[in-house]
Amino acid sequence: QVQVVESGGGLVQAGDSLRLSCAVSGRTFTAYAVGWFRQSPGKEREFVASIRWNGGNTYYEDSVKGRFTISKDSAKNTVYLQMSGMKPEDTANYFCAASSLFYKEGNYYKAPRTYSYWGQGTQVTVSS
Image (spheres, rainbow, N blue to C red):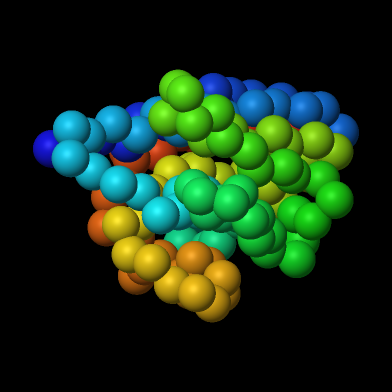
């Protein structure tokens, strides 16, 4: 059984910072990448950032580049999303997901269909 558990969401003001955490566990599970996605009411789930478990290559959606940083602590099997300079348009339910698939091309790790294991989501609200 693979578990993906997000934490750290909340209500912040525009310009503030917030850090989300994603703990991945599973006795026989090997993650090749972990990604963050977000979804607002009435919108499709969109890619935010992802990180390869081995090597640490990172990928970002254009609107968060320079503001968000994804990182991992392998010893804790945890991935973090540090968000700074937050904007009201960052308001969404943020989901963490783990992929057991290996792709040489990093763009695959921007697609929700690459990920088999998803958390329940954590709400982030940015007030103006």
